[in-house]
Structures are given as C-alpha cells and as structure tokens.
Length: 454
Image (cartoon, rainbow, N blue to C red; front, top):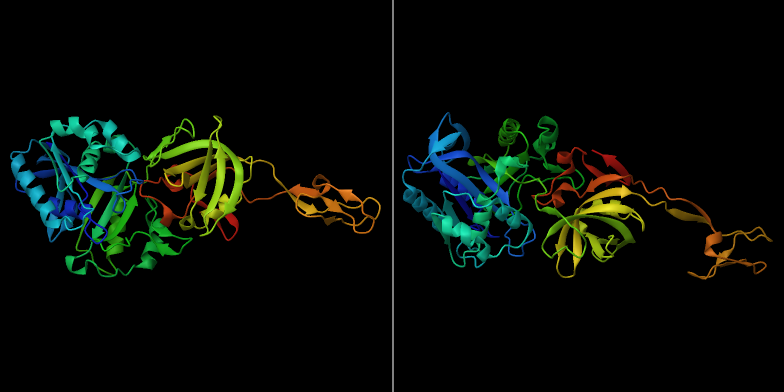
C-alpha cells in the first residue's frame, strides 16, 4: 500500500484541498482503492502564509480487501473504503491521476498557492507531524522523508510539500482524533451565497450529541457553513461516525442539496497544537502553549474592545495576554480576573507585538479581592469624609480631620467567577481547539452577566 499526502491547492478566492481529495477518490483508476478513511490534518494555525485553516489531506491507497463501506460520493460516483488492502499494482498510474487532478484544480494563478504532493510506501516519522502542528517547519527537515518517498513533488516553490509530508506523518486513530462529514456544493453553485438552514443547525446538538461546534449560541449564528467561496456547503464535526452520517443526511434534507460528500478522520478539536511551556521565556513566536501562572496585572480594555492582562511565572517571566474582540463574551470572564489570581492559559504567541492570544482559560485559584463600599467616617463629626483626589486620602469638610485609603469600609468582591475552565465563543475557535464539550466540562461562558454552564 502507499501513502498519499497533498496540500496548498486552494486560495482565498476559491477551491478547497478537501474537495480535490474527494474528486481524486471518486475517480481512482481500476485496481486502486481507498484503504480506511481519508485524513484531514490541521497543522500549525499560526503560520503566516496559511490560506484559511491550514489543513492538509492524506489517504492510504492499495488493492482493497474485505467488505467496503461507502464514505463519500461525487458526480454519481461512490467513494468506497476498504478495511484492508494489498500493494498497488501500478503506482505510476496513481501518480499520474494525482498530478492531473492537482494541475487541473489547484489555484495556480494565485501567487500564494504552492501545491505539494507526496507518495510513499514508508510513513514519515511521527515527529514530523508534531513539528508541523506546533512549530514552523523548514524544508531541510523533510529531506529524509523525501528521499524515501516514491514521489516528492512541489509546484512553483512547493511550500505545500511541507503540509503533505506532515499530514502523512499524523498517527491518526492511534491518538486523539475526531471525524468530519463535509458536504460539497454542486459545481454550478460555487462562489454564490449560501443560505443556512438555521432551524436545523439549532437542533444538531440535541439530536446528535456527539457533534460539536455547530452553532454559536452567543453570537446567534450557525458555524458549520464556511464564509469563503470554496466548494464546501457545510461541515459537521463529531466523535461518532454513525451519528455524524445521520447529522449530514439531516442537514441535506432542506435547503441547497449537496452535490457530494466525504467523511474524514481528523485531528480537529484535539488541542494537538498546544504544548506545555516550561517557562514564559521558553515560548517562541508562532507556537501554541499551555502555561500556569499568577495574574500580575489586572485586565484592561483597549481600543477595539480587546482585553489585556498580564501573567507572571515562577521563573520571573512576564507575559501580556489578550482576549481579542472576536472572542465576544469570553472577555467578560477575563475582565473578572484580579491581580493575584492563579490561572492556566491556553493560546498562541504572536511575534509583534509579543502577545499571547488567549484561546482557553482555567481559573485555578481566586485571590480574595475587596471593593470599597464607604468612605471613612469622621470620628468627631460622624460624617463621611470626601476624597482629596486619587492617592491623596480623605478629609472631613466640617472639621478638617483626615484619613487614609485603608480606613475606608471594604466588602468582599463577588465576581461571578469560580475555579474551572472557560473558553471563547465557538465562532472564535480554531479548528484544532479542543472544546470544553470534548473535555467533559460543558460549555462555560458568561451570558448576560451570569456565569452559565450550557
């Protein structure tokens, strides 16, 4: 059997690498079959040259054995998956088929589109996947894998070859994984506006509980539909293949009818991009991390609605953390943090300015905070004193008696915040973000000023 990986065939103006995979699999030459499920592998979400979700595709091909299962369809042609397989009789025919599809469909006119294709009978080291999902990979790191490949080809500058190799290195079902059912538009509808079937999307969570990230209840919008002019009609993600198929059929019964569909094994929703950081100083730009620390500077809102706060670690490092405006109600949670709170933060480092982009937050321990409820009372006049200005204390306007800030009356601050996990609204999630639903915590956020678990 041989492994196939390809990447970077799309652009911001159209096409989708997953659709190219569907077209390839629906028209495989005789004697060449799909073994197992095709794989949609999301790689480092922070790379500056990604098109959209930085997803590459891979699959295994061979001469099928066992009972096949239908896992897709396009133009009336079924995509069948076999549980086992033997060697491919004519690898050159498969390569010709792949190259032809890429040259016909890839958005070569776009200067940022640089397709890559790998065909190999030797799976690259798993380490390459972890590099690809957590770091910036340089082409010289692929030299051993390329040397062992049957074909390693890039078009133009061939940057997509990095994604192709890293995708084939993903361990798949051996590690954490999910599935996605993608429905594709008939070619005549590409580039036209989609009409979401909102009432059906709203029912997905209850009817198919193993699915996730279907609708953003805070923003009031479905998120299974892409916003780009790509061939995808909708994509539903979940943990149970049978239920996912039912959900796909349910969504296809109303509105625009799909022209085809395909099931994928994916690394979406796994947090594979997140690595534990030994210290703040050890965190590198374009990497994604988890690190614990103490809030060293409380939250503040800046222009654009972004909320910033600072975290310090045991090594003396300091980090500015940002909950950006697209995270919506998540910012209300962040605004309730106070200096001294112990937290664990999940997110990515952006280089300029050096800021940590917050994706998820665990409140470990809350520092006891107090708010002033009364100015000091004059011991002679028994009247509340007046402030003399910030940091200048208080003074009785009747007798001139003075007091300090410490003599005010304070009460415990009720922040509506408890230890636990919190995350941004689903429409702000990255493809790799592991939602709290998959972590067994439910979806926690702040709605209307009240902390709720949905």
